[in-house]
Image 1 (tube, helix red, strand yellow):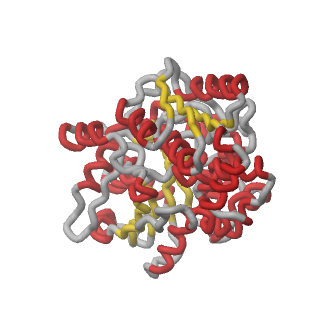
Image 2 (tube, one colour):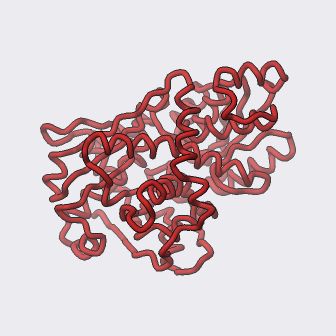
Image 3 (spheres, one colour):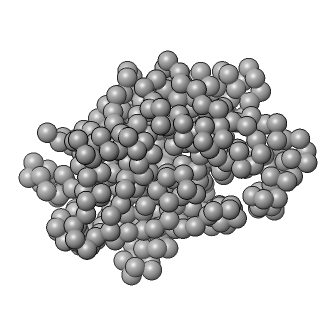
Length: 400
């Protein structure tokens, strides 16, 4: 049976740290979006309004940003990977990224012999694919390491994007540690989406790359005449996407008028939920296999930058079972008549699955009231990936 655990954030603050606002405000997002718009193949991904589903749930609106169209890579992660890789090369060239573009950066890097640079990362799949694609587009190499249990399709996706992909014998968090050691030993540039030894600045660049997605969504909501969303549900693995979008939304809509921000995780890797439950400023970790179908969210150690921001501005943390994510995949793939179909993977569909169970299951009436989800609510969700593992997608959707 689908199970939801929801906890109000005991550490929520009346303000967000100034350092976080500066990292993720609208002026930064516009510069990064300008950079992304210069990459061949860039286009704004769709924001889909599910009007019939909103009516069914008794909500004013449900809006889903469909990231399966991003650069032809079927996931949003390339936004962070391209920006972080480009920042690294620009730093080596001693130039400001604002003074060049993607095409000229590749030419400049090649002329200075930087095409021999090797970028390394640990990944559950989509981040590594984005890094591999970015490095390949800029004429460089990449080495991408995946935790044990990763599907062959995710490994092949990375290789198809031009990267070298390797399976490890560790879970994600220990794979990150292993790659950090290898990068230090071999002189590789580590492009990780969480802070680790020897990789302190790059996670911020990865997070900032995701601002393009948030800025597009805010612009598209305005074009729908939907105005400001009242609620945003954000998936968290290590928390980089959730923190970046939360920081942006807290800036663009002004902190005291921002939407209600809900952070969601699988119950087998719910480190943010457990951190909030502990009610302490330092985050808590989850160990073990973290065997969830939501592979992109199977992370047991919160990124410290993300935790610092989310503990300030998030209203609630949620932990869900795998069958809720599977339900979200089926609903999006088989929409109510009049709504647009969305192909969303296990992690991508988890937010919609959560919303569907929350609004239709009488066990969670108290949660609905606490979160003020009602007929005036306009909910923004991010389908962060399509069917990045097609075989697994069909197994869940066809076979249940």
